[in-house]
Length: 442
Image (cartoon, rainbow, N blue to C red):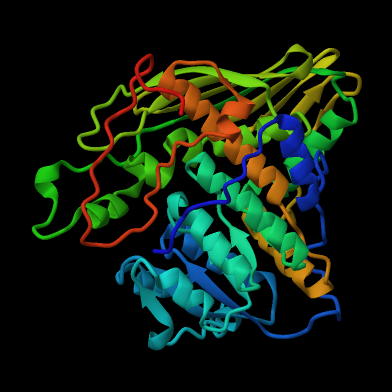
């Protein structure tokens, strides 16, 4: 794997972050909305797609890419390991309509395995790259794709540490300069009901927003197997990559890897204004063998004008579940929930009424990605995908250390979780579980 060192400058303030982000996509700007069926004459070429990361989310992204445009073909797969690729192809061929599965053009020589598989996919002649590996790899993969002039669908989150996030910001700027589309996997931003909900909130439906409370309370994740289950001869790197969710350098912790969707919706509600600081509590309730992630956190973000954002996250079984966003304003209240109809009580009451022709948000983000390529009007989600990821990193830092963490501290953090270079046979010790009050802000 190539060197992951990032540029040596730092983004020292919130003001500088907003200034830099404006170069990417416009600070506080709403996401571009393009009709999903737009196939402009500006580009009618066959678009060749390469998938990097062939697990469930990668297979889903490939399905959506093939379904987004009638002149898209899948030509290359890459994964750290051999076995996910045939499973991915089997899944695609088993779920897609016949006229779509015909556009799966992956030959055995275009299936690449190993830590350098991402580069082989990028160099295989593709036009669009789908990044769906564990997020610790995201900064390197994104940089390689943008450097090579590829359009990118980039799954969330975009990094697991601040040095990686700073690399992502540079890649987003480069994509802007090269007129490349960069669509983020923060899928709720492409969900029609949420777009209408937050538009009404921003138009003043509940007055001035005073607080946002978001929840990501769900069941336990697959536990880390004990060391005794490690196959003989399997090295540290492979053991950790195969169990990637349980390691902070690979997943960023459940707060970053999963609850980042809720972080992103808090940011969306507040028009993508960076928080000033955060405090948090968290820990590990369920034994996790060798892993080093928490299974619950509660983060409080402070924004300008005494506005607060609250986010509760837990991944513990046999408990209350909720995945909702509660927005409290000076003149009303709004609720966005996974399971229930969205509604607003305020100056004008509103409830979302679903329609049978509504496009799934996962599909919609790919529809808009390929429509933007066709039209010559590239989408660049760089600003908001970087900010939401950094907000999540900031919350994790506060929970891990027990300290108040400012935006500047998070943005300029020198804590580097991801090794510069990875090799299957290298020694890679497992970092100890963070201990609030002992673990330092770096």
